[in-house]
Length: 122
Image 1 (cartoon, rainbow, N blue to C red):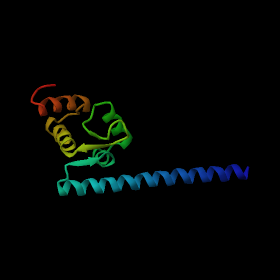
Image 2: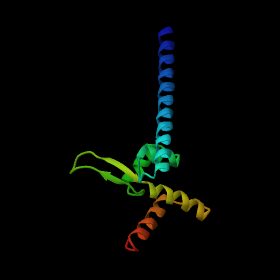
Image 3: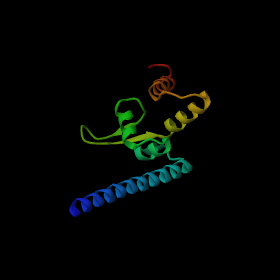
Image 4: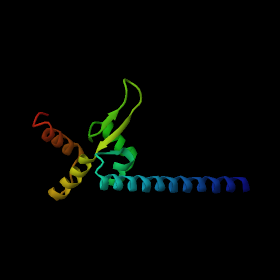
């Protein structure tokens, strides 16, 4: 019985440690994103953009991979790569939600954004 209790305590502490680590990493990503915004850096890493948008980085990765959110896949040939997010995309999405005064669907917004930025050719 005691060993089961010890195991439960250890598991609970690990869960708390992971949650604290995740929160710390998110805070760092947000701080980096705000610094980049202040310095006019044109791109964000996925964790930075996710922190600005108040979503998980995993969810933002899924949106990018589903071609629903604008991003750049930086890779050589078929190797693994990294995604970067245009800062303008994040800012325009947030500005669009404010201007529209309603909830925007990211997929619809991305399609409209692509049409605008490509001169109407979808």
